[in-house]
Length: 138
Image: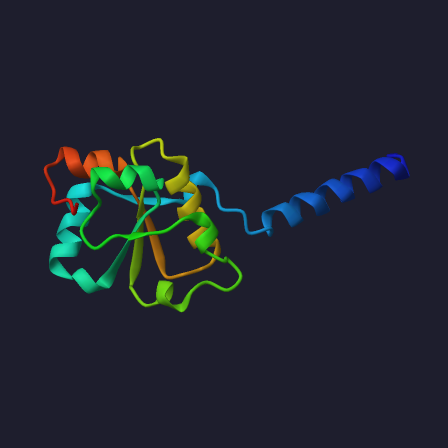
């Protein structure tokens, strides 16, 4: 027969696991991506439907940005009370410099936590957009 201390420990582990699952953490695997060519088509068809968010550092802006993109840092997004402007477009698309952009990934997760409409991460970031010869604002 199991000892009472073991039963209590197992119950506490189960409780902690349940609390962790409800903590609102967004996993990297739950981030939806969109490739540059698809995003270009979306913007061409319905430019006002999407808000493009440039999550790169300010010095990267010298390389240009996606047309109509809004520069934003993670500190600009309050997940408890997000700016109402983030709820207006049907979807938000976040991009960083390249596929490994932790800033863009963090921004995407923050927006997902804030529960603002649909949020996508641009697969490959600015480098993928530029390498396909898509338009860039300077």
